[in-house]
Length: 307
Image (cartoon, rainbow, N blue to C red; front, side, top):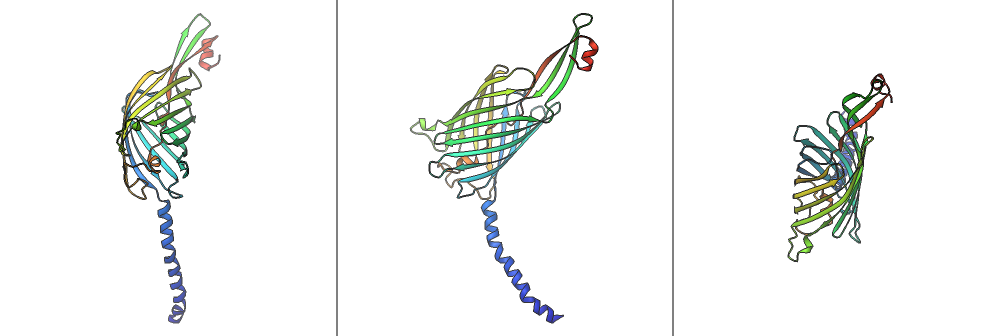
């Protein structure tokens, strides 16, 4: 028995040695692809396009650095609570690549959004980001999935003896797109501070459901950002349905450690700065109420839902 153990000991020691020898490169590989999470807290107050209450957001944005930090995949998770207690949530993945020669940044992302109202609504979204020196271009598309409409209530009106009108009041999720161009305003002043970044963004949006009007409008965002941790913003939208709406947004961002891509000097420009910024998109599903008029030859036809 002891002789067998002695014979097997060199093999056992060799196996242990091989396992230990793989820990260092394995640890280095894990560190190389480890994600650096940041906690995001934001509040948006005032009604918006598709919702009547302000809301607050708590999220985690986790990014990694590959290819000498020229490519960064990220995971973005957000939970939203409206002032009236209703909930929403978003989750997405994406990546941003920086060209080492000209400094241009290209980003792609995909998201899933959820919102609870009269029923549970869902949508998927895709986004594109293109950035350069002094500007950032974004475009996002949104497609509702699952159940898209909910009947709030029904009213029947008898026009003549054999004819009637049925008014169906619906709540529906709208799909569409938005886009914007953002630019930094701090270089307009010769004595600008590199730690403070005033910015301006402007762009169009369009939303449409199965019933009702097309929503066509534009959005302007003006904000002041301090390093990567504080942002104060005023956002105004104007369209043919909701007309003019102004909201206030306060955002806080806290790095939680890990292989951080934050620059050593927070006030100096760095290729990683754009990587740690949250994706700008409409993560609240746009819900719109619409009245659909249905004409029936007989009242019984309305009850059966026929025309």
